[in-house]
Image 1 (cartoon, rainbow, N blue to C red):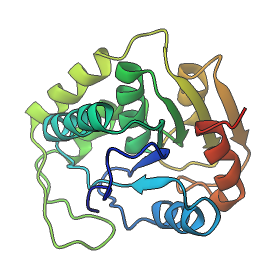
Image 2 (image 1 turned 180 degrees about the vertical axis):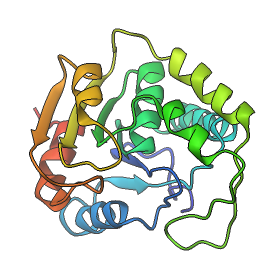
Image 3 (image 1 turned 180 degrees about the horizontal axis):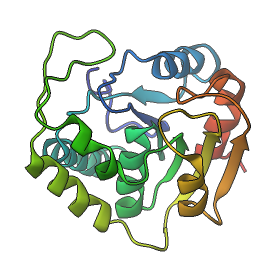
Amino acid sequence: MSEPQNPTSERPLLIYLHGFLSSPQSFKCQLLKDWLQQSRPEIVFYAPLISPYPGEAAMALGQMLQDFRSNHRGPIGLVGSSMGGFWCTWLAEQHGLPAAVINPAIKPSRFMPGYVNQDLKPYSGEMHTYRLRPADVDNMRRLEASIPSVLQGRYWLLAQRGDETLDCRDAEQFYAGQQQTIEDGGDHSFQGFARYTEALVNFLFPTN
């Protein structure tokens, strides 16, 4: 997606970060975008395409947020799913931003070795092929280590115990002391996400 047309706006800016091998065309991203257009059109929505290579992703996302912090005068909130939840946390800790994380990856380096040296294609159908190397796993471990053990950001964890990809108990422990909504059942996509769109936006941009 392109940059917001008016980055110096004082309007709220919501940045959505998708998961590993996903894209801004993902269901939750489009659902949130559509809901904002209909119900909160004053909020600027931005969803970048994130590289699966940790070093590239960190550089691009870090520069993106630096630019927004320099030019955008309104409040900024983050939403991320799965790997996007990790990136939200990494950015929120650097900039003290609020973030809603949905079935987030806590230690992505745990599952990355299973993808090394394989041809990887995005789930959303884009015509790209990626191939992770061992150095990418090392880069991810360094990024994980850069997140402090005591979180400084303000988070809302949304997770479902039926997640077939990630164990939500890791997220419960990692975001201890933060707002949490943990549901029985569900899956990694977080079934029924639409139920939380309004509350999520109000969490990021409180009116009081």
